Image (spheres, one colour):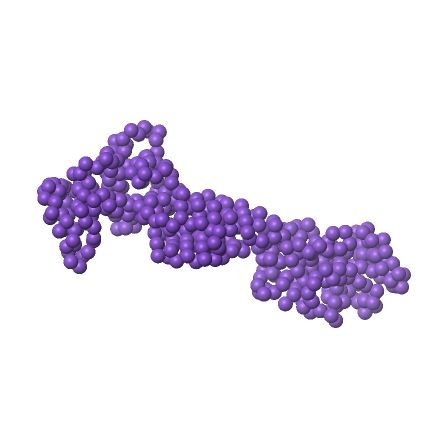
Length: 454
């Protein structure tokens, strides 16, 4: 359905010079020459004897006497500028309570009668101050929402206050409506897509800076490709390799120009995502990722030392793990002497404390770095119980206070303890400081995709 929504001003109802001469004096004296066309006349806005609303009501009550003389050139021109047939017209005059001297309700009611023989016409009045932009935006948003995505809305906003005109634009942002802009004596059909894209780009850039991919998916008018790229980024953040692989294949099959880093390093993904969650102030999620890193970061080194794969298997009491330990007599004896939290280390199953002490017994080139990482993560491990078992909150100060400057080493009071811990982890993984290459590369792909949107 094609719908024309027209805001009504004092010039929407006109009468030609020749017809004005035929009209009775009591009606003709209500009109003055249109300042934009000397051959046409409009209802005067200013009159010492009566207001615009009173004079237009007088004409409305006399409709049968004057109808044949009146015309609606602005709305007629708007209809002519639309390629499609119009099925419905909604006239939007002002109709304040109490009545205001410039209200255009009765002018709209006259226009309704003039057009009703050809169109389905409805009058929807603005019953509040037409300079209140918040109420106006709500008014037009509600009016526009009555129609489905399959309907074509054409907004003719030449009449009414400047605030009314602005509000129609704001309420129609990202809705793909057509705006009929009066230029001279004719209308230009505008979609304002260029304005929308500028606004959208600013929103997108802000979200990309903060890696807010869920927010990007919900931006208005965003392409499916950008949604898929965002879903892929979310899967990488969530360490969901299977879904990431599926989405990567889907994206690349649809657009061969897109390049996505194929290699996975779960430890790198864990720390990169931890860094992003830290910067987003999502602290419970941040420390969960640190704990996950703590549980896993030494496994490859332990496998090299023990000469076999580390497998966690409750069903057979971790048989393979215990067989590997039993073959390393020196390591086993060393583990038997270790205490953790004033209790003997339980190394009957694979765990981070066993991993740490196994690596500590070896001649690892990064053992000093490993010491700092392990002890620092152990220091903040009590926060896990605070959140999980005591329904405790979490903030950056609580995390920082758990970290010891003595453990971190080489740190001054001005240094950020969490930043220092990140430095050690990046160095252990042989990654550049504040590494986000995976997601920065995805962000660029999203920007490139956005540029192709019309």
